[in-house]
Image (cartoon, rainbow, N blue to C red; front, side, top):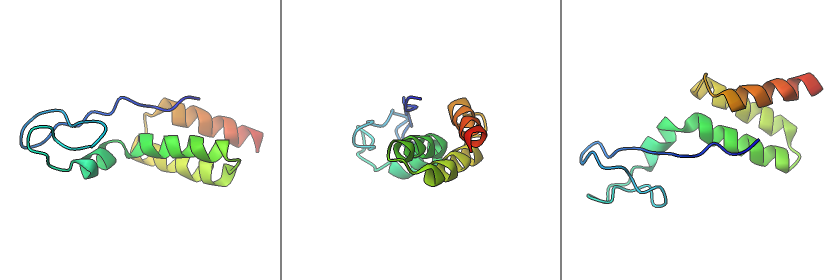
Length: 89
């Protein structure tokens, strides 16, 4: 499984896409990291689950995958990975 990427959040004031590196609006320099976290919580948890699996921590991976699906129920990669892990338990 590969990480889910392509985050994009618009600044609510300027309507400009935030810089993906700094998570700030390039126009007004407002910190938009909280908006990124809210919008992409499922994908963030999915990526953390992948990190946990690479580290051999299946329990944390399962927790993160369940959190990912709670935040973003249609996140198919998280669902597929969770199902495959539950089958092997």
